[in-house]
Image 1 (spheres, rainbow, N blue to C red):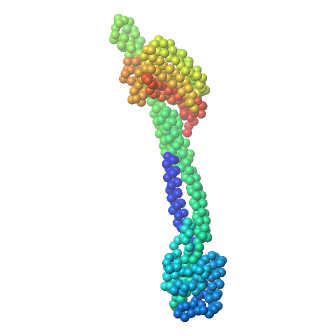
Image 2: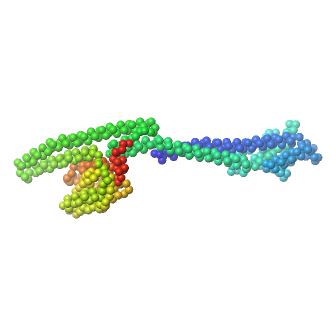
Image 3: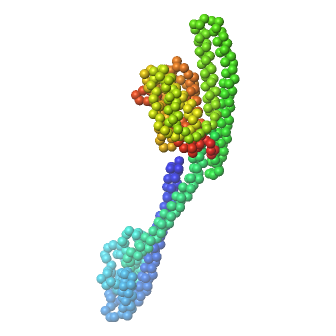
Length: 477
């Protein structure tokens, strides 16, 4: 969830910062240009004031006699150009120069400068030039009229380079960009903390839900931090888990009590059946069938009691050599396998794991018994022990009929038996007991096809104490 929520927050924050930063950058550029334009307006006004008193020749032509005011205007323009590098000039209405710097600079017949010149002839200052951006090498043209006796007699034009202005704008943008980056980093850090704070209870809740779903009913959610809604959800979840655990405990107690209470009357009934059998011929099929069903019922009750105890017991975990333990179980089951004509082999190198030797032995007995039981004469059952990372495994494979995909999904369910194997002795609880025994110690059992035929059963147990204790649910969340 964090991988989806965090990018969304980052995109939203980036959009907000861009929405603030772009207008600010445009404002900085406009402010820098406006400052230059205002300066040029002031300069053109000053030059227009000087040019206003320069005497003209007849019919608007320049007079040939020296004019002190004209010389002053020319010196001002030359000094202005020399200091600032800004071309400036005063031009008569017909475009001829009254004074200009440099002297070879004139108003062109077309272009932006000509437009500003013509606009100033209408007795108004030229419009502000269009915005110049840092990547453009444009120049700023400002024109102001020279008015004498209410008439426009000349126009002052300035042509400013924009290099310094664009540099200042670019520096302002760099400051804005640095501020945006700093704000973005701060926002990402805040988003990381916010999403961590919001999602931490969700992660704990998810982990605890997984623990309870896999049988670790002691797991609970710690709700010390996070939003109030999630803390309330955690409390509700813990209450639900307590209720579920109570119900399952009552169910286990009922199964255990029922199995125990039924065992005594059933034993008495089987005893009376045996006494009755003494009065009947030995080959009586009815009494033999009743005896068989009675023994089967007794086995089911014993398995139910074992299952109830297995789901309730807490494993006595310790460092165990599961290689030696598996080799011992292979040796114990070899006579039974040999009697059926099944070859039982083991590859059991020394491998340590964190497990309860008694419960693991019981689990391996059930798995090996099941493999030998369903492997036909001449078949093979192999037991292999290995370690990989944080877990150790015992893999039991056989060359029996195996199971279909649908049957693999149900194997291990209580009282479930394959329809093809209903005539094989058993209650359908052995693998359920095995799963409960393994779960008590943080282990698990899995089933898969064994090629070319048969079943592959994998018993997995943790290799380290921390893994085993956490999986078993010793430490309450």
